[in-house]
Image (cartoon, rainbow, N blue to C red):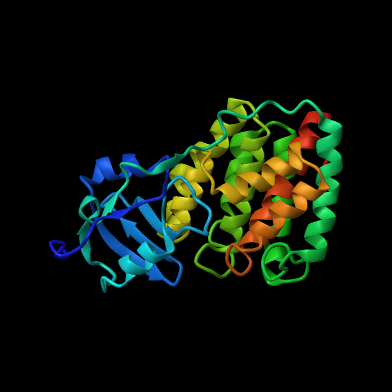
Length: 293
């Protein structure tokens, strides 16, 4: 346990709506999992992660946002991987703003034609400006591996065999390079589309249960935390903004949201966006009862 008697408590600016639950289950005792330039991951004994981020980053359900100088101060403590700390002795969340997930508060979209037009525009934007090193690329090894999986998912989804469709998505978990592999990012985007479109519980539950139960052994623990939250409707703000812009926005809002998405990792923002596009395309096909080509 790090000695904290000489440390001033840091006041968090924002927290995700899943942070307090993790702290309660951990009795505020966490271990340092990993430290990066712009992120510090803390983990409890149940493999739930809290991520500390500086203030210019997007907040997710398990994120704690700190002022730039406070983030630097925390990193200057000299903590290393596996060091144990008492979160509440270092960071106060009492006066922080809680960022709530939006999945339960969105209106059911009324203008499907508008969403269809936006989706076509989004596809063109991705093709022009997206990073094609992951699943957005057409000719790399990852997209070739994923192609039959996505085709089978689309067929099962249109047939309303949602549990089987969820099993197909598992084939993407762990696929590709990166801390959050391309396949994981893509699946997160699919969930963002489903939740933003306010799909019915019978669609969500089958996909969600499979992902929560079975994805853990297919990827790393940081990426699994991202997927688990996404399966339950929790995303960073930039991802929700992107999905919402495609359904409810206009081309200008879509472009603005995508510019923020490109800030996520080297190819993660593009891979998540590709998943949103794929999810939207299949949802619209389900609504219109048309086969996805």
